Image 1 (cartoon, one colour):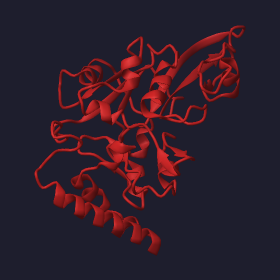
Image 2 (spheres, rainbow, N blue to C red; image 1 turned 90 degrees about the horizontal axis):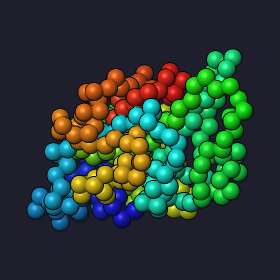
Image 3 (cartoon, rainbow, N blue to C red; image 1 turned 90 degrees about the vertical axis):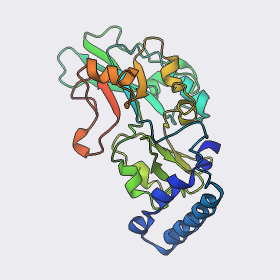
Image 4 (spheres, rainbow, N blue to C red; image 1 turned 120 degrees about the vertical axis):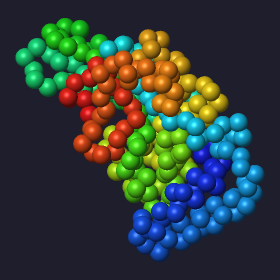
Length: 280
């Protein structure tokens, strides 16, 4: 993506500086040295102090966060469709920056049945891999409880994906968003394996990894992520954690929130309401 290729020298210098710790072979070291040289060249051109990604946006003044209210989500999947269109994600049933899982507890069963729009039965119900819906497979079952859970990249405070990337392509911005610079991604998929949330996928066409960016090209212009803007029931919430009156700050303050897999130490910045222990 053009946005991710036009990275500031400050961001690249900060994360590519860690290459010495991650490099395990001569090829990786060479890639890191080449990337670092590009950083130094870019730095010479940006001494004017312009902030990434535009002169009007100061990423040192923001700390973005995301909220999901599972008690409101109706599983309409408009968020998934909006994300695909906004971010030019492959139009099939196997590549997503955000997805929705359905949890259904049937009478007499202790564990939920879980499916998402990628499930073959749901694909068949939609009639196309480019359209998404949940099949009404439980219409004759005795359902005790059911809910939908939107999922996406958690943009962790301590992201495991950044730690394992051998070229510095995956990095964390000063405002807390985790991005991928496809200029330096070599498609090793270490980050895909390291992510405990399954939030990354491999782009077979461009041979790079991809994931949710919280629509960074939008939020840095004062807009909402596409999935948040399109949600008809307000199940998705986004805002600046530095602003105590922002939607996300109020969401966290007024609800008993939780994060996914807190035991990993990644410290996610996506906060949930209305999920149970089976959701991970």
